[in-house]
Length: 155
Image 1 (cartoon, helix red, strand yellow):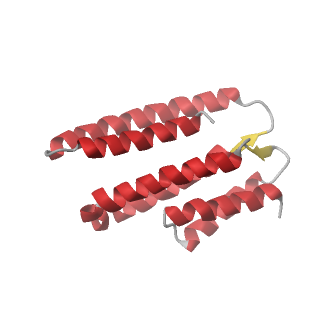
Image 2 (cartoon, rainbow, N blue to C red; image 1 turned 45 degrees about the vertical axis):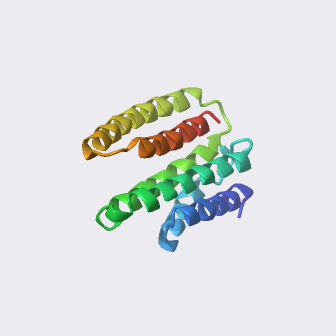
C-alpha cells in the first residue's frame, strides 16, 4: 500500500471517529479514495495541520449537533448521516491535489462551494429567526464553524 493510501486511510479513520461513521462507510470511503494512489496525485503540504483543524471543526459540529439538535436527532438521523458522509468526502478531497497546476479547477470548486454555503447560511438564518426565542448562541456557533471551514479552504 502506498504512502498516500495509508495516510488517507488513517485520516478517514481519524475524522470518521469524530463524525461517528460506521465501519461500512469508512471502508467505502477507503475504497473510493484508493483511486488516488498513483503518480498524478499527492497530499497537500502541512497535511497534519489541516487534519487537526478539520478535527477541531468536526468536534465543534458534533458538539453543536449533540447539544442543540438533540431533540431532533431521531427525526433528522438520515440527513445527518448523509451530511457527515458528504462532509468527510469533501474533507478528504481537500487533502489531495494533483501534482500539476490546477488553479482553475480549485477556483471553480471554491466558487461552487461559496454559493452553496451562502444558500445554506440564508436558509439557516431564516429557520433560526422563525424558530423564535434566543438563537444568537446557535448562530454564533454555526458562524464560528463556518469561518473555520472557510479558513481551511484557503490551505
